Image (cartoon, rainbow, N blue to C red; front, side, top):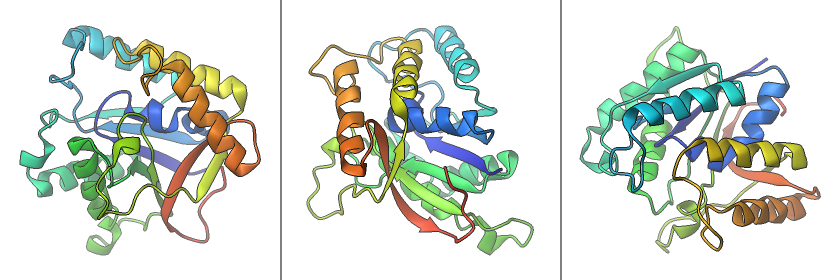
Length: 231
């Protein structure tokens, strides 16, 4: 079994980008861990109290069957003023702690500043095995799409999210994904906001139709060894 690490900027990004896939991995017996770069998201509009947010995260962990949660204290919406080296080193420590060999993170063409810097730092951290002889090379690095962020990657000079891997999630996992998002206070919105149930279902339906299934999540695999595990 592989050990998967989802490196995301904020609590909720992991569910928006890969909730159905996380559920499928856990059901298949894989170890799944999550690294939040900004565990307190203090600048988020409508964020509940810190104690309530901590409770949301713990409830999500239990509901989704997550193995390890790692929370950083990088300032929300200010990753561009954080040391790139510190961001990279924090992710490297998460890789070592979780013994992960497959990593999912944000796509670098993303409107959200924190998402972008998380992706860049994660790409650098993915080379940890080249700097340490005691670390096994990653099997795979993947980018995911986060509604209300990746879909607003408007910079025409940067390559847009181009999925080349589709993971079927089935309706039962889509329903559980939406319920997991509901655990986070203040995240879901009314349609036509991208973080509405209708939009989440719509994207899963669209990605499913692209890949010959009913519902799916899409990813961009940017590095893959021949022995990477199949989901």
